Image (cartoon, rainbow, N blue to C red; front, side, top):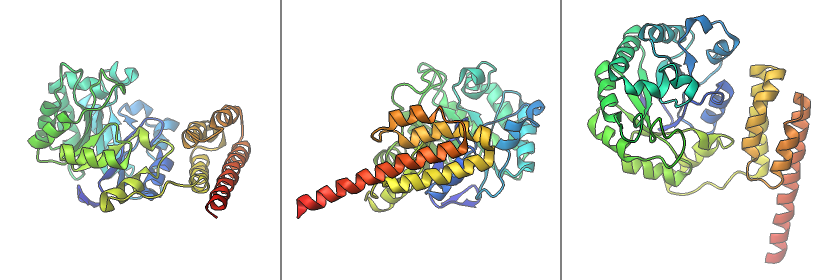
Length: 337
């Protein structure tokens, strides 16, 4: 797929998620089938450019192209400067956040709160596009501020006129947060009205759902967020299903263990031991969700203070799962005989 001048393996996008889509997670999703991964949002406040968090988020060393960085803020001039800063630090695509429903973002009129002020939206988009004229700028937003004010079509028109090269739409309003079901009628309406690529987002959790959303909306791609937490192989499963109509076999406990260990290694390397251990806890929890004995394991895991402790406990848990799988396979073979 050609996307904004970049050749992508497919039309499957990793949604930007604060505290999740760091470089290790983005890299892993790309390795396991995603065409593009958007970074967690970077502040437009220049006073924070030197903070450890912002520096980490601007670290793209060794990352597979294209590198898409999301910026957030409500001041056109500051957003323009943030775009230039991130281009100077390796970004190849700038994405603008108008989809985050978090109170700490919306309370400063950033994120999805901006959808209430369409004039300001236009000024921000024009400022960013003009600040980085040689690089594509994209926009992520929601269907509206609330269900009575679904102004996504108007925002899409403003975006296209401002020079935004592609848009991603989450099928909920800001007021919905992440509750209820995503709806795709608004996304389909937007797709029918604009000429730029439209990416559909929201509740895409299975290969079948990805195909349904693509067919229903006519979108150019799908963006997957929470469903990939602890399941980065979801992208290869969707890609295979879209290409063949067939399902890949689910990963074994042995393969999940291998992927998790790879992820943990990169987390520790990226964050250092102290922060890495803390960040790793939520990922380990996601990877083990639904596995027998996982609740007890997660409770114990959250008390472990070191990398060595985490790795040892993770290995023991998955080795036990592999032994259980092998025993179950032996029972099946015995019954078949």
